[in-house]
Length: 171
Image 1 (cartoon, rainbow, N blue to C red):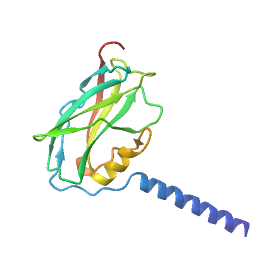
Image 2 (image 1 turned 180 degrees about the horizontal axis):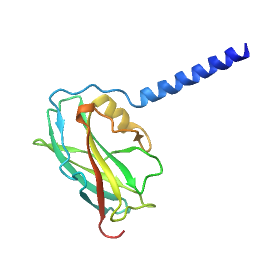
Image 3 (image 1 turned 120 degrees about the horizontal axis):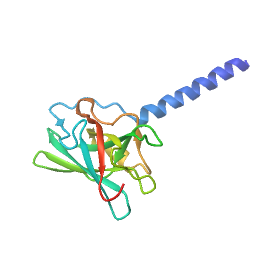
Image 4 (image 1 turned 45 degrees about the vertical axis):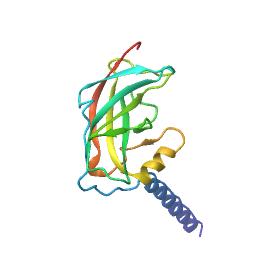
C-alpha cells in the first residue's frame, strides 16, 4: 500500500511538472506566408552597444518582415554566450519593436548595471513572430523572462549566432 501511494504521488508530481513545462512554452504552428530576417547584427558579426542614463547597455537591432498579420507580433531575444548569464536560455527583450514599410527595428539589453558587457563579449540575437496572445502573456509576465528557446512559430525564428559586443563609452 505504501509503495502504491509513493508511485501515485510521484505520478502526480510528474504530471504537474509536465503541465507547467507545457504551459510555459506553448507549441506554435507554422505561419504561412510570414518571414522575418535579422539584418543587424549578422551571424558572426558585431553589435554596437551604448549605456543609457542608468548604465544599462542597449544595442540597436533591425531587419525585414513580410506577411505578418493582425494577431501576430514580433519578439526579440538575446542569449549571453561568453560570458554566460546567471540563468541559461534566451532572454525576452521588452523594448518596443517598430515596423514600417517591411522593416522592423528594436533594442536589446546586454548585461545590467552591476554586470555591464565588455567589448568582445559574445551573444546570440533572435527575432520571432508569435501569436499575439502568447506574446502578450510573455510581455506581461513580471520580472525577467527566460525561455530555453525563442518563442514563436517555428518557421519564423531567425538567429544571429556568435555576435561580438562593441561596448561604447566604457567597458
